[in-house]
Length: 255
Image (cartoon, rainbow, N blue to C red; front, side, top):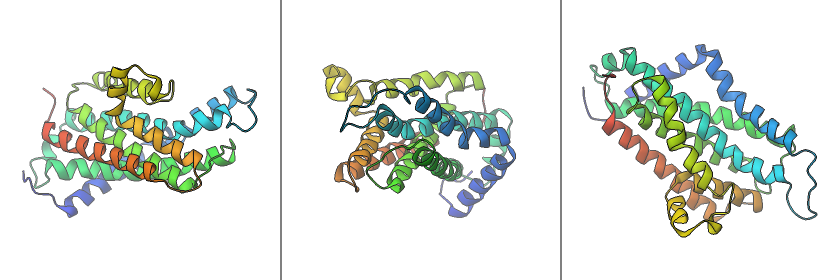
């Protein structure tokens, strides 16, 4: 097994994952339909809630941030289980006896699921802004960009979590460890500046906090802001760090 990165092998890995994904209709439906369906449920929950004049509706405020949360959660779950299956089936062991490096493998997975995330974000944002009348001050393209970057973060953390799981059940168990603390502290339930000091410090190192902040910047401004680009950079950097850690901890198979 080599350690050098090969763009050709990375591309071949991404193409293989996309071919497998194309034949897995349930996963495709989960990626493309589930976020829009969950967003629709929130739309129905808040459809009759009175809106304060001059203020965004509850759905506009929460629904926009959910465009970053849902892709993150879904891609974490799908990726962690997909990589675990590669390992438990022996596919990963066979792949790593070839010139394919760990980094090629993980970047190929990241690229494949990143493309899936882009399709997911396009569908979800299109449905939200048309069928659900989600009002966003900034360009929808920026919402799609943030949703894709956040989904790639979910992919990277899913790959990292899969290295420590021995079964699909254990992979699912990582969700409350990795996802829920970020959901609770990202500022969606309580503004981050109203959290106790030590929880604010924890929130400051959780990447989902910056994804939510970036989406709120798009929701409040007609164009991209410096804060938004900074937040996108933080989320992207966290995704790259998670991929590097996943490459360092990747095992060939489950014991």
